[in-house]
Image (cartoon, rainbow, N blue to C red; front, side):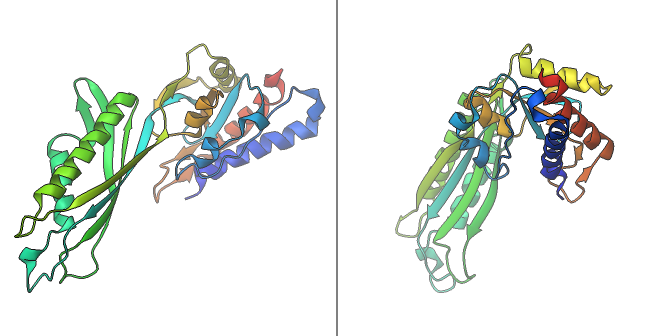
Amino acid sequence: MGADDRAGCAAILTAIVERLKRGDENFPPAVITFLIQEEVGLEGARHLDVEKVGKVDRAFNFDGGTVHKLTTGAIGGERVKIRLHGVPSHAGVAPEKGASTIVMAARAIAELDQGGWLGRVEKDGRFGTSNVGVIQAGDATNVITPEAHLAAEARSHDPEMRTDIVSAMRTAFEKAATEVTNDEGVGGSVEFESHVDYESFRLPEDHPSIEKAAEAVRMIGREPFQEISNGGLDANWLFLHGIAAVTIGCGQRDIHTADETLDIADYLDACRIATWLITDGAN
């Protein structure tokens, strides 16, 4: 792997070099940023110092996908951390004295799945997705597990729908913690935390960033099309900072898999697009 997003960095660097070769003073000012830690929460875009960037009339984010796809909006996402506390006991000598956090987690996840709150979520015509992606619990088979840590996420283009998904998660885990008890009726407890990774956004179809990006794609002989992403982008946080960016692909294929590749023809066209946007297209 590595096409996502070394290809984007390379396209930007190519554009910088080509602009400098032609004389930077011949073109309007351009602000270049390399935003770190996109995969772990869009941290670079989240903490961008907007005052150093200044006023931006058009913005372009080079990321994954085919080069003529213009991503003009994206979903909002929320991360969830869950810590379950149970009652430890010897699993062979006195299993009835324990309250297992693994059982609590299993019950909660099963209830969410059966209720339609995991995977693709559709409720009253509203849509979202959710996933429990990490479970860490237990050190030995002879101990009723007293603690479990889980990590989950919820996504939706509708912030209220995303909030409803997170609320359903909280309810399921709190219910499971109280229902799983030992022979004395002692159950567990939950620590539940969530925070918004990025809010959803959508650019208006006539935004200058879209119009200029489409012009750039047509300049290389392709026909652009627009798409709204179900994954988070640096553009989500840029939008909240007042920077309306269109995301342009660089030829990455099958990203985040062992089959990730880079389409060289797309990549070279992305370099041409990036160069044109900060040279002739910037005027």
